[in-house]
Image (cartoon, rainbow, N blue to C red; front, top):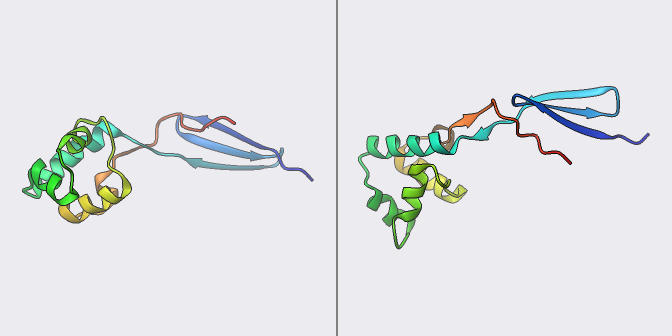
Length: 108
């Protein structure tokens, strides 16, 4: 029996349908870039670090990437998130701000 797959999202809840019988429901979060940037600023200040401090640890020649993270224009890469988590004394989950209320199920 061939199984077809359908993906439907309603306010952040994705439904995977296999044929006509099996339905799996789950929430697919998205990263709120703006709120994550604000969180990076808060955690940086709480840790007593400057943007230049983070720049030096990450090995960046300029602080532009860090400013982009803080302004919610870009997200740190996974390896930079690990560095930030260590510097801030938190987990990566405490840096990222997730939203569960968006329509983020890609159509095939």
